[in-house]
Image (cartoon, rainbow, N blue to C red; front, side, top):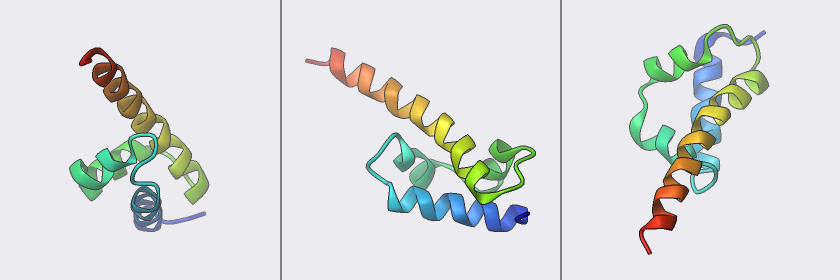
Length: 72
């Protein structure tokens, strides 16, 4: 079981490593540690934390792609 700080740091590191994928850039550019912690809720593992936050970031990335598709 990971501590909240370990999970937040792991999620942030994952976001940097996957910056151009599935909306992870939003987390890097827009979210504070406290906001990431809030998204984690009751996660207990690093893998679970990345998966849960990844769901939120993918939604944002997909929404951005939809908007960009209508611009042309």
